[in-house]
Image (cartoon, rainbow, N blue to C red; front, side):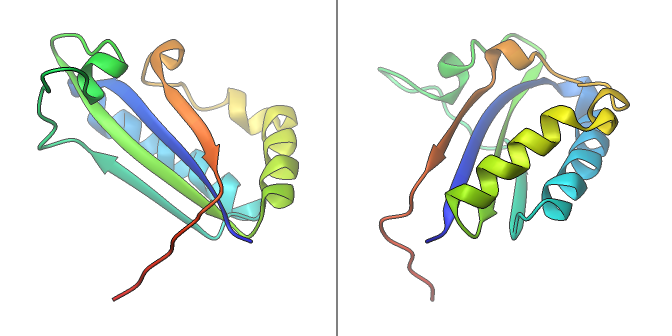
Length: 117
């Protein structure tokens, strides 16, 4: 069964191009290690809510934008093996991370509904 990793990331708005470059490099590695699809989104309509929201979830600071990403995998076993390979791959140290990874929210999800139009 497919498996999804999701990410919500606060990125300095001035680092938009650096974020895209970083994502292209790292996402190519995810694909090399078995991911089937990756989507990187740059927030342009991320409202502040009354109780909670994306900006508060990542402690968004002035001058930052919320990025939302997901990776699709064929299954959790492929994802787990890829994450091990990513951690050990020296290429991970070659591309500077253009955001505060401590405020990144991430998690793995088993799809329960997958509808297509």
